[in-house]
Image 1 (cartoon, rainbow, N blue to C red):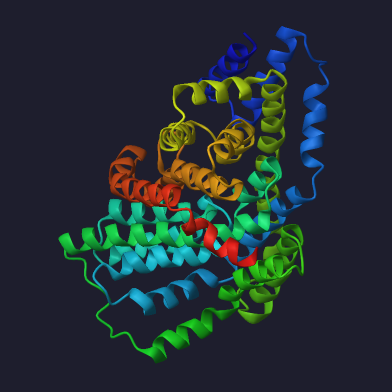
Image 2: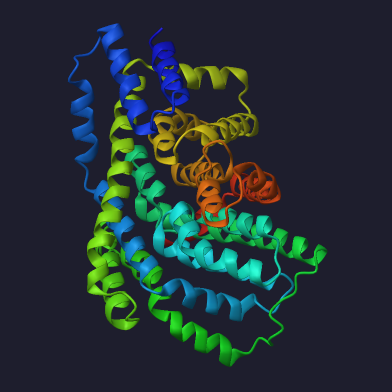
Length: 426
């Protein structure tokens, strides 16, 4: 009965278009009032407790770093470098856009932020180059999903906190899966471009051009090296790395590139504060929601149900994957991680999956949710930039969705893709 009230009221609030953070809080409160099993101040205590976490402090700082770097003139420099690498190939502009999103993912830690920063520049540019607008928008929306797979990644921070996993190991484990997803998207972009005769830049790839564009983008490209090198080298924690990323991005934007002005900083602080507030409301209410699930022993019931269906590792992981793909269509990524990690992580470890490996599987699964309606955030950002309807964009992005599913299958059934780099540091 408790589970029915909790999930039923949550579904009702979502149908009424209540923001997901508020819906999670109201459904938790409604369940507490109906059952009377917990005091009314349970929700407020959980909200405070969820925020009282040193690792969670990394979230606002990574958001601010992404905002600063997004406005600091790096997008064009990253694209110039990516274009020098692959721009002369068939569909070179599309593939360069995907590579640029991969570079920017290593800075922003956010899918929608990657789409917004790269899409505003690249979608109009691709259309001017003769690319179909639907394809151009789908390229950016799909590639933007890599923003939460290649570190730093805000969902990985949240998973580390909820699942008790090392955030540093999660970051390292996400490198190859992020590259794999990017390559799969590039393969489809090449196939589509070949079919529709979308040529490259026509310019010959030269070492001098690659080096010169790399040199212009070096201050941006060095950020992931600092973050991952510092964390994995034991020089600072992920939270401290986020603060360093903010300081470095300010220096790069203000003095090294010179495109960020002091007058821009107040707006950057306001924008990042609004994004942070939205995320932390979701984190707080989702934590209370998940805590109530745990108290009612619902995770144990779900685990027993799944394990009673089959004891096959493949069957159970396919069940988990389908569940995550469905949840990703309807629920915010961070809320899904907070609510489902206590339920699914024990099942995954019980069938032999490493918590870090499972964390990557979970993040990639939910990253696909960025491009699946009705809640696909990247679709809405891409639609806002291009003017296309969500229906048009959903059809155009279907092949990219399939490419990401293939990558996900490889990540699930080939653990070294995620775990090899982690094992080197272990």
